[in-house]
Image 1 (cartoon, rainbow, N blue to C red):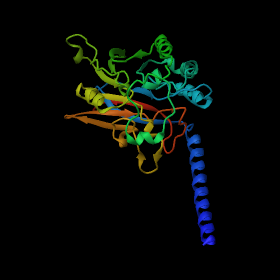
Image 2 (image 1 turned 30 degrees about the vertical axis):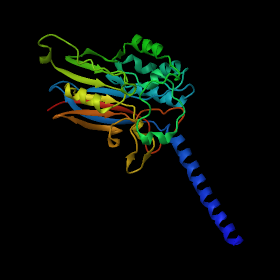
Image 3 (image 1 turned 180 degrees about the vertical axis):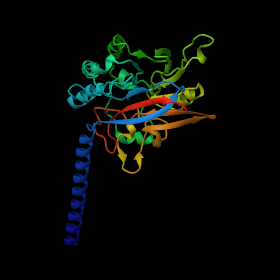
Image 4 (image 1 turned 90 degrees about the horizontal axis):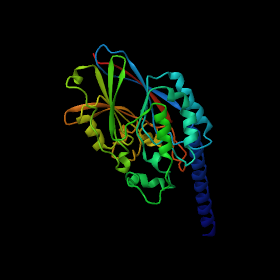
Length: 311
């Protein structure tokens, strides 16, 4: 009996050792993949006929922390893409001292026209959390009193000084050649800050001029996507999901951290509501919470979309 007990203990130790090695390997891979930055390329026919193409660089979920040199260098290199427009869908910060490093990293891109909306990690620093809680539903969509506030005011001031337009519960039109771009956006739906402002108001004949309607939100909750789609958005940009962050190869995301179906957690899909359809681009994001700094089968990304004319 003693020998059987010893054999059982040895088998248990072997299994435990195998699990520990596998866990360490997965952690090591996840730490490596978080810095394997990529650019996803898409093409979407949403412009009026005869209008030249527009290139849009979509950034989301940078989650900047001081000292992230690889991320900062990659962000600076994106200026080489020469986009016509930068769209930033929030969660830019992950540390109370991150505004300076963020602006330094984005400086080459700030010379391009840009629009943005904030996410919860523009307002508040992330906190340690049990990752398994995400399987029970979205993380807290309320504003906890104990959260550490971030310097989003300075970040917004610096974005504004560069000419980037804040679309938090507001809309604005911007000319682009002979095209008018109508923007609308909402403050972070994950915190319940969203209030759809509609589209910019123009003259009685403004709808006759060539224009495109672009909508932004940080977190792609279905109620927000429905509002944008019902209002006639030509394309919607969102982030927040991190593409699932830890995915299963061949299957994809296990969570989206909102009520968006997991198969839509990354990529270009078509949102449908009451007979209307709108292209929806959800970025897998660039960073992670500093308390969960891994990615598996979900590389960080920027997205370069070419908006082309409808036929």
